[in-house]
Structure formats: structure tokens, C-alpha cells
Amino acid sequence: DTAVSQTPKYLVTQMGNDKSIKCEQNLGHDTMYWYKQDSKKFLKIMFSYNNKELIINETVPNRFSPKSPDKAHLNLHINSLELGDSAVYFCASSQEGRGANTIYFGEGSWLTVV
Amino acid sequence: AQTVTQSQPEMSVQEAETVTLSCTYDTSESDYYLFWYKQPPSRQMILVIRQEAYKQQNATENRFSVNFQKAAKSFSLKISDSQLGDAAMYFCASLAMGGSRGGSEKLVFGKGTKLTVNP
Image (cartoon, rainbow over all chains, first blue to last red; front, side, top):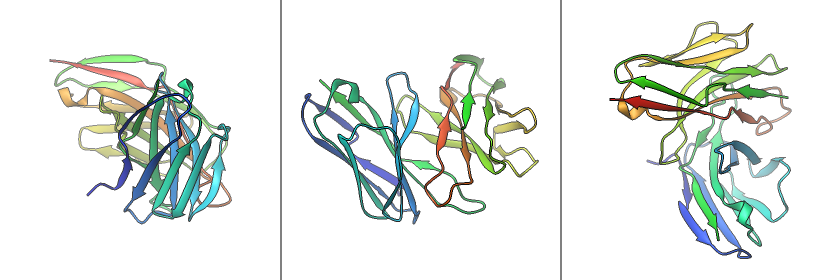
């Protein structure tokens, strides 16, 4: 059973296209995230949602639009893709509370813009 | 603001030996958690071990253990009896609590240490 699953795992697309990455978690967590790992492998948060509500919105171009239809799903849509958007995008989830507060990651979606 | 520093870009160890990866952090919050994640070439982020700052006892998970020095803000990872499958990037990360609601805490990562295990 995959706890946090995201699709697609690999995506190669041309500049200017629009693409989406989907994420689902079956852990019953209230919070979901999108993280970006750049070419230097540095990981940084992009967005967080808690019970479908946007909580964290880091300095990310507005071409990136997350959407959470319910607390188990968090999708990422990217408009007008640019070369610099090439990265690995990780979905993650967590549950707050003593003894919890651990963030579990999906397998990553490797986006290449050509 | 939180910061996490991993001063060793690369480390190597002989199979079956022990290696320690260093990490220092800084946070203004009194309630926080520290983690080590492993990232093999497949790029999956795998949780190795976690430490609650309010616990004095160092966390252990089988061959993995930490040396948590709260006053020094140090959080090193020790891998005993290293195996070939331990070869990966290792990321130290901190999660400071204190946000007004769930989802407001950010997991902040160091730049990673690439561990090579030699047969």
C-alpha cells in the first residue's frame, strides 16, 4: 500500500505547455504539501494545505496553481512551462499532534521541460 | 527563521564500518522536530529517523542512531555496520512548531550529504 502516491512519475514536455501532477494520500492526514527539488538537489516547500485550505504559499510564480478537492488529494497545475521549471516535485503529507508531525513523501514527479 | 547546515557534501565508508554524518540547525522555536531523510538514486525521500526536541534520549532505529546535542544545536546521524544499500544522499531537516494552525510549519532541509559505501 503506497501511503503517498503521485502521478506521473516522469514527465517530459515542451516549453509553453500546461501540465498537472496529481497526488493522493491514504494516511488520513489533514495536511498535504508540495516541495520542489532543484537540479542541485535543494528541497524547498512550495505550498501546504490543511483540510483543503491553502496555508503556505511560498514565493512561487503564479503559473503554479495547487488545488485540493479533498484532504486526501492535492494536485499541482503548471501553466506556460519554462525551462527553469525542470525539477523533481514531491508531494507530502503529515498529521499534527504530539507523537506525530512527521512528513511523509511521495516518490516524486520528475519534470523535464525541453 | 530556521536554518539547517550540513557541512559534509560527500562522505565515504567501508562496508560494515561506522560513519557519522553531521548536521547543525538553528531555530527560535522551543518546540521542534528533527529528521534524517535518505534519498537513493531513485529520488524517493525515505524517512530514516526522527527526534523530538523535548526528548533528551537519542533516537535509534536499528543500525541508525542520532547524537542530539540540544544546547549545541547539533543533530548527527550514525550509521553502524554500513551496507551497500545505505549509499544515498542524506538530508537533515527541521520542523519548527508554533504555527497558528496545521500546515503552517515548514520542513527546512540542509543541502545534503552524499554517502558512498565501498565494498
